[in-house]
Every structure is written in C-alpha cells, then in structure tokens.
Length: 423
Image (tube, rainbow, N blue to C red; front, top):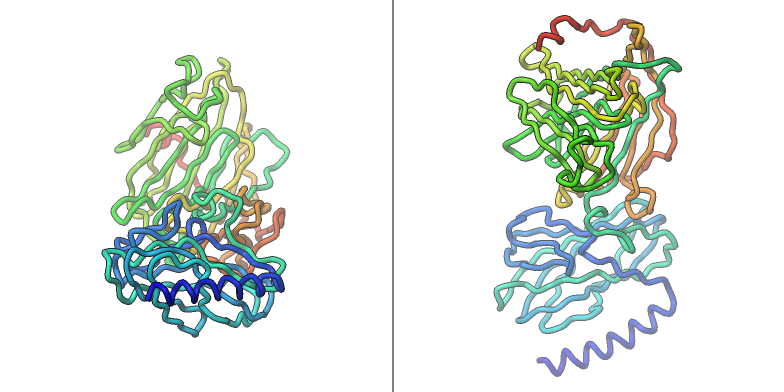
C-alpha cells in the first residue's frame, strides 16, 4: 500500500508542478487561520498547525477571503502515524480523504466561489488507526485571485484574535474634565473574550469585559508615565497610586501593553441592558493628575465607584475620548462580537455639559496589515447610537477614518455629584 501511495504522490507532485505554473498558489497555514469550532477538547491549533486531533466530533474551520467569483483547486498538507480518513467540506461539496504517512499537497478537489467574501474549509475526522488523526499543516489554494486574504507574514496570535476597532469622539475645543457614555451589548454580540471599552482617555481606559462563562468585569486602568512592559520595573515615584476604591473592587497592576495601575469589579452585566460610564480627569495642582471612574449598575439601580487613581508627574485634563472593541482570546476570533455606544456627553472644567455627536472610525495593526477584513463600525439610526463590530469573518469592512454623526439628545445626564463624592 505504501508503494502505491509513493507512486501516487510522485504523480501528484508532477501534476501540481504543472498546475502551479498556470495560476497563483497560496499556502494557508492552519496555525494562523484555523479554529476548532466544535469539540474544542478533541483538537488544538498550535504553531505547527492542527495537532492533538483525537475526537471525530471536533470540527476545524479554516477561513479564507476571496475577492471574486472563481473556481479554486484545493490541496492538503500534513502527516499521520497510522491510517486516517477525514472529510473536507467547502460550501456544499464534501470530499472524503484516506491518508497514511506524510501527505504533502494531496489534491482535495475543485470548488466554486460564487461571490466575494470569506469562506471556510471545514475538516472533520472519520476513522483512525493511531491515537490521533494526524497533524494538518496547511491547505494549498490554487487560484487566479490576486487578493486572497488570510493570515500570513504576521503574528498567528494577533491574526487569530482578529482586528480591534475604535471610535474616536469629537470633543469640543474646551477644557474637558468629565466624559459620559452609555454601553449596550446586544445578545448576538455577547462573546466570551470581549472587551467592550466605553471611556478611553489619553492615559488609560474604562469598560466592561466578558472574561469567561463564569465571570464578567468592569475594568478601569491607568498607564504609568514610566515606559515599560513590566510593572515591577516602575520606580515608586512613577507608580500609579490608589486614592479611593469602590466596594468589592480589586486593585492590582498590569503589563505587556505598557504598564500601570488596574482595578476591576466582578459584576455580571447582562446583554441588552444599557450601562452608564462616567470618568473624571483632573490635575491636583501638585504636578499630578487624578483619574476617577464610576459605573452605573443598572441591575442595582445605583452608581458605584470603581477607583480613583493618582498619576504622578502629569498635568492633563480629559483628552482623546474613545471607545474600542477587542477580542483577547485567540480561540474566539471566529465569532462576531458587537457593541452599541450612545448618548455621549462631556463636562467642561467650568461645569458646562456639552453633547458629543461625532465619532471617527479606526482599527489596529491586524487590520492595517490586511490579513483580516472582518472589522466594522457605524451609526444605527433607529437607536441613535454608534456601534462597533469585529471578528467572525463577516463580509463588508468599514474604511479607516469613516466619520459618523448621531442626532442630539439635548438632555444632559443627571449625575448626583455629591453622592459620588461620598462613595
């Protein structure tokens, strides 16, 4: 049997060499483009591709973007210790393969792409003689497409996480001390591993996370003025200092994306409920700036203090007001998350409320590299809110720098400042 397979592979290599000379060829590695979308304990995506593939119930999907209708030819590359069979599906066409030993560029078949967009190559094990079905390194795609999009020449980790997206709010030409925002996560956008960040400012951010099936958080962080990725290396004179903290709030530090002080409240926020976020940034006239954030717990009908931090050697007011949406679990990059932001207001140093009705869309390095196109943002006229959306390989991305405007609500938020001071 091995002898027949060797003859088959030699013939295949010669055939492929001829085919590849006619069209463009792309190697789509599973390490950056595949996800175990069902039966996650029975397979794993690693730097080597698909490994630890033991369960026939595991479904592995590899995502590729095609820019036009076409017919493609697909090949598979990998190896196995025993004899395995598995099914490969593309659109409604299914192909069964039987392999043993190394299988390099074995042809899978021809498949139709009917229109531009993302498509998944689905893989599922059928039978095996060894403990594992084998290791799959990549799919080889032969196509006349000049704009095939997939993760390559880029970090697999960041590529699988997917692009982060931002709304940059248009603040008035005034000295701004407070920023207010309302956040709603729709049921369909509620995905584990998401950070729905509401009140971003020049030195930190404040929002809510979906950390796991058992935990959700309200997170407030401020960067230290000391440039480092390691919070332990920050000199005491440049550390973020805690002035106040709310009931049940955990205080700590963070690193690896700059470093500084962090606080979070474990709070089981709910999809479709609207939550209010309020942040103050104010110099203390001693060469430092104080950052304080409050969260309106809709389910409890009360404002809650998260924390008040002092940032040394800083004299600023509120700047760079923004929101963002990100996925921080790579295994969740195949799922689409969404969030709405509405009724933005800022309050000047003089105590004047000013409505914020404009925002500008931007995205991160993953989107800029062109390896993922599933990013979006915009304005929902029915609810008069801005929104952000990412992940899940949807079709239709939003251009960088797109401007959005919402209708004026004209009624400033009613904030009990005296009560907040007493929290």
